Length: 170
Image (cartoon, rainbow, N blue to C red; front, side):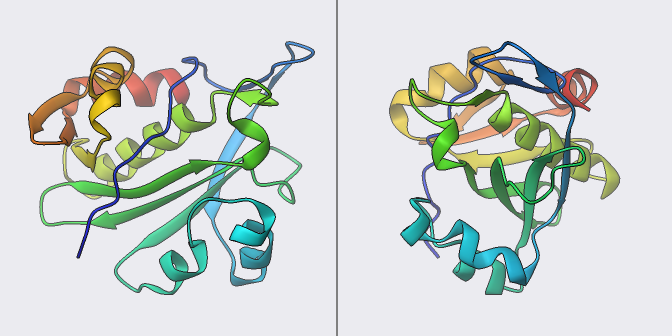
């Protein structure tokens, strides 16, 4: 199975998501994506990845990030797999309106990475999270997430970095 190269950017480290226009901060929550929500996160709606395929893969868990008390608007999505000794981030994507210079909210990707770390702690994996990075983002993930460049394009978030992310975001 080919691992997708992650190309999310960590725009700011915040315990909420920040509206880029008003500067207002909104508490965010992560919950399981429901089958009924799949049509809202399709490639027809300008999402880059096939979230239906992720959702239907029984080896993966798919989560959504929403603003508290506004769960109908999905800010970002995360697909993870629980491995023997770590959590693997298969995909992470901010909503189409949360990317590039015109993004509406900052902090989406960071919240989702922190959630993957939290799951790793809950599963007894000491916060260890792995993912495959695009080559040009390896340094970015080292600086912003404290991730370690392991081999080729594989990145690892260890216990120390994971604790910092969970405390900061969650």
